[in-house]
Image (cartoon, rainbow, N blue to C red):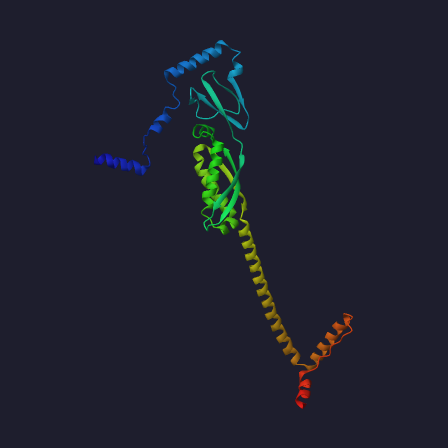
Length: 289
């Protein structure tokens, strides 16, 4: 008993343990038709040979370059890979086939009402691009690969966006698209489907929320404008202080500045000329009273 346990542990360590299950047994015998099956196939081949060349029109099939055919013989998949493109041969009465399109398919995700992490209700839609890379899995593992992928995309969109805040939803669309693509690709891998791209098209906010966000943005812009104006006043006052210190060093500089101001006033064709009077002169008359 101890040796059996140790050998099992050794096989687990080496990664060579194979667990037998009914599914694995069914997979091993999936291509076997049995005696009755091979007898029916042989009879079908004799029928084709007996009615040749009339049955050639029903036995020869054609698939396009972008298509593959999965052949079922007596309900079982005939080969391990799909047939095509071009001509292939099927037996009457025993063989049926399903065409699978390998081109990239795109579909729109209908608008989904989603409650975000911060309890905001938004309507989000998107688009998904996918293709079938394994025709046998797409036929044998899922009843309708295209419809199943569409339904899964809708639920994945709600699940992924339900873990995001509104700010993340509006700013990090690329990250959200990448997360959705990984989730969809992992879920559809057993169906033989490869999700190539997922994009969030539009995020519709409630009207009241739009007004609130617009008011917030306007207030933020006004606050920044006031800060910029205050910084400008501060810089201007510092420049005036430095200019007054320079003018105070030379009395003639003040006179030149006064004449320059009069020149600017006269250039505007203004008939009113203002002569500034020093405050000290007015203070002298006030004191006399």
